[in-house]
Length: 357
Image 1 (tube, rainbow, N blue to C red):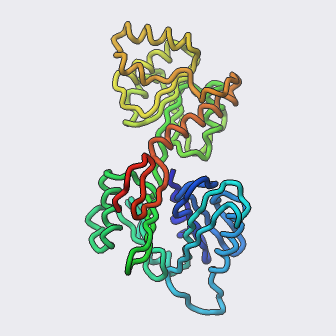
Image 2 (image 1 turned 90 degrees about the vertical axis):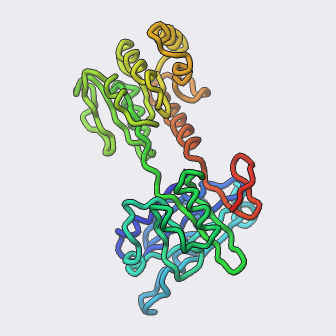
Image 3 (image 1 turned 45 degrees about the vertical axis):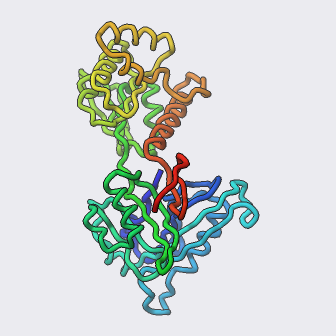
């Protein structure tokens, strides 16, 4: 899952910072391609996985921070390092990580266009050339042909938008492409009881935009986290009917009648990305029978997930259920969004197919 952390943040921070981003990975590694962090003279924000790799990366980044006594610096300074994680760093992962370092000063901040409508950010892995912010295919004509082809496919939807490292070619430098941070997945949670509260707490800092629905205001906790939108309604099924295409849904109200009404609303137009209903196998059987009696098709019912959570966690306390459900949602989201890839000559995608760069 690509993490576009750091560019917008780097634009806000005073003083020079180095953005460290994992450009590509091979084998087992602590983080995925696109994971990033910011390094200042006395501060670090984010992580690329910790351990000796991160220690070495931070140390190298600080050697790139400009010395005020040396005057002006070359604009858009970058560096690329590859670290095997086994013998050289003593980490047990055993893979290798290619890391891009990029300096942001007032000069670079002034040189970056607005990010609001951007879809992709591209740059060569060498000094001097500004980052390229793309929002439409018509903006790629002056890029190297192989870079333009990949960017065009990402913008058109022919290729998943993932962090992609393009190795150097004859007479051309290597390039790195990142998608802008994917918008948080809409997640509708129906029910503010003990399990609903535990799930909302567990989902903090995860990439979900939570809409939390219940029938009375006093069913919600006194304080609700930023980024969570409470919805108070006597008809939660109507909220389910109006949810955007691809949204995730968790149904865990205090009432089987409410649960069933929400199920009917969702399964009547099954354009959701995930739909989970809390309950046992016997509850699932009862609900399936009643939904079929109400005219819901088998194909729609087959998309209902009940019980919820990953299969190897059996605890029934709210905290355990919340951890299990959060893991299930992240697994689903990662399956949708894919992971970063290294696009090289004769490379292959995650399904083993050859990639033509």
